[in-house]
Image (cartoon, rainbow, N blue to C red; front, side):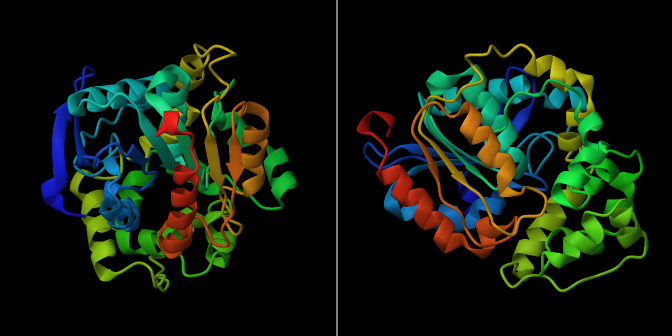
Length: 331
């Protein structure tokens, strides 16, 4: 991504955001790409290079705690309503009335809250890997420690999340950053089954400074950008994306969303990845079936959690067909 396209804005909450913006050609819509953990916005580089020549507007922020954006370490600052407010400030800075929101991984959480709190600013929404993220009714810590999840999926799907909320997690990841990257971006999904989704497995991997072969889609430059982004501000802030889900403040924040606002009436696209161990398609399917009240589309890709990069051409084609098929009023 061309760094010259990056801008900064200070939101009403007092945070300075870094974001990439390329204005639309003529009447094309603006695509609002919302990355997940560990970010940053350059995660979307294969989508940017595909959609920019087609004339679509592109708005791609470094989310709070990531990249060139401010990095507060209080998890309470990462509640959904806060992200949604920050997004509106970025939209207003660029004079954008509406966007097509596209979230991946944890990016689906703030993208969903944008829909919940400010539906008039979202003409359509797409969720990749992690589906529409409905408001939660209880502290996620109870969910991640429940034996029911392991019984349902056959493995400890939330094991790594519990480690990420430990006080020593940030320091340990920083100390063994190459080990962390090789585990979090595996060549084979089996690595996650053997380590990431095993109680204590992530910590043990890092403490032993294990390394694995990186996938072919991750170039040396991709790794350098990711590594620099994580180490420049440390991991304490990015890990707040996990910690906020374990904090009562998140459930309290979500409780302010009305029953009607939980429903998604805009056109919705869900792209699950069939080999995704930490965001199995059934989770997104369940939320879509329950909360999607407008036109809903589902197209799966045979890949793991990072298919946005490993299967970029296929993902981009699905997104493009869906966008082109949206009613004129939404684009």
